[in-house]
Image (cartoon, rainbow, N blue to C red):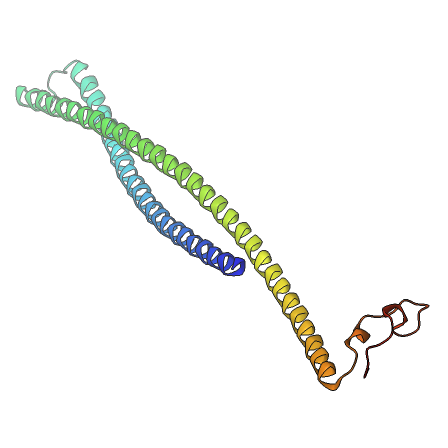
Length: 223
C-alpha cells in the first residue's frame, strides 16, 4: 500500500515538474520576443538618430555657408562706393535683396535646427524610457526564472527522495517475499515429515553439548 501511495506521489511530482518546465519554456519564449522587439526599437532609434545627426550636420554646414555669405555682403555694403565704378542703384538694390534673402534663409535654418534638436531630445527620452522598461522586464524575468529554478530543484529533490523510498520499499518487499518463501518451504518440509512419521522436533536444534533430541525428552513412539 505504501509503495502504491509513494508511486502515485512520484507521478504527481513528475507532472508538476513537467508543468513548471513548460511554464519556464513559455517564459523563455516571451523573453526572446521581448529581446527581439527591444533590438528592433534600438535599431530604429539608431537609424533615426543617424538621420537626424546627418540632417543637423548638413543644416549646420549650410548655415555656416550662409553666414559667411552674409558677412561678405555686410562687408560689401559697408564699403564706400567709388565714383565711376559699377555702383548704380540697380546694383545696390540687388545686393540688398540678396542680403534679405540670405538673412531669411538663415532664420529658417535656425528654426529647423532648433526643431531637429527638440526631436532628437524627444528620441533620446523615448530611448531612455525603452531601456528602463527593458531593464525592468529583464529583472522581473530573472526573478521569475530563479523562482522556477528553485521550485524545479525542490521538486527534483523530493522526486529523488521518493524514488529512494520506493527503492527501499521494493527491497523490503523482496526481503519479505523471500522470508515468506523460506517459511513456506519449511512448512512444506514439516508436512512431509509428519506424513512420513518423522519427529518434527528435529527442526528444533539442541544445545552445543546436548545429544540429538536429549533436551526435548524421549521421542514419541514410531519416531
